[in-house]
Length: 272
Image (cartoon, rainbow, N blue to C red; front, side):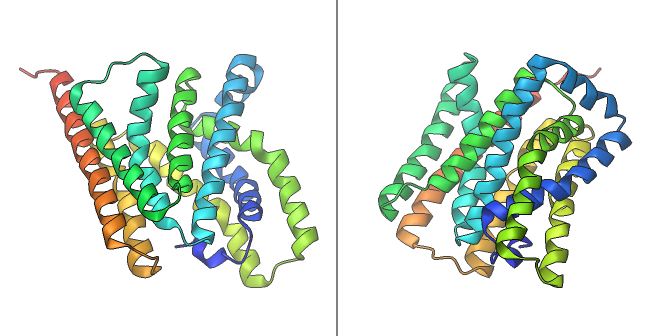
């Protein structure tokens, strides 16, 4: 809903502002969390730095495509992407890391991708925004797994890698579009805070609540996006296309969530 206030600014320009004004917030959060040394360690370790550069590219891609979705009235497709993300991560684990999928996980992934196929055929176009969001965030998790770095320190490193392009982008945007009016300028400065706060809270919550709870909560965001797009933004909803497609995707989500809950319960230590 915040980004909707800035649809008069091109998505690439918004991304430049978003990264630039998020830098101080993430650096402050890393220092407050005692992860200042993490940033220096990563930058001094070539292998980790390479992985973090890749993860920075992926998170930048994810942020940009989300901004495009808002700017082009395709938040429904964005919600699709975030519904698919956990199952894309599962599929990447199987394809890249050799992790085995049981029949319920295969059924969940199959139902979700059947929904995507239905959506593509029904709309006559590939829902590329949702697919890129799911793929970029799924691959982001895979890359971060290769270079385990504390969440806040890692995100601070990522925005530092993106900083040169972002700052140059802000300068280019100002030269091209001119100095924004007071309201737009204030909103652009706020993009850093709007970007940083949810990620900082997420990093803090991961350490405080069970992963099964976190797994369930991750579906609230795309659900809220879906409702905002359909109800508040008035995006076109084709009942015979969107309803069957999202029903298949939600079926996959329910199967996946139930399976994850069951696996976590089975692994939990038995207390005397």
